[in-house]
Length: 240
Image (cartoon, rainbow, N blue to C red; front, side, top):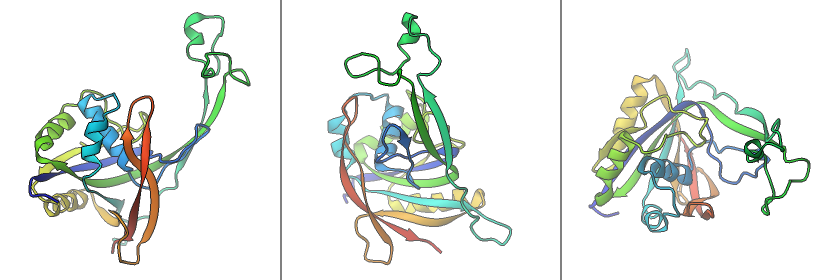
């Protein structure tokens, strides 16, 4: 870590969130916490960056990112039980008139532009986290901190929590700090004002504690039409 880096605090809270990391088209699952690709994708939306962004991603993926989850406080002053994921069933491409040139554009087709097997209608199941809140502290190069803070406050494109159906219920940008400790202190103050308690955190790498270590394929190497990702290891730690 260099003394030239700064830290963005993002607060991700909303009725629904979805952070996919290995989903297929038919079943769109969600991780229990924000992915690195999802957070960097959110920053790209704020910047209005829709291309491959390989050079920018190379810079940002070398920066640290920490996540903490916050649950509501129950009547006994303890973390309330998390709502189970919401499953949404959708029909994609159904009900359109194939003879209408405009409606035909909305019907799924093969890569060659031909009619898909089964008539072009696709059934999908999509999963969402309910009533979740996360603090994310992202390390950024000093030269980008002010620009990213400005973009988050005046985004070029709409910001959402993993999928376009997931609108945030709180301002996402919560400050730019000189060190991570100050950012986490502000996150704790926000959680206290919302009567939420930290339940677990996600640390990058294999932590030496008793936390659960998992491998995620969520480090973006290239965005755009041909997305590419690489793996990383993270440790989930329960907080008391």
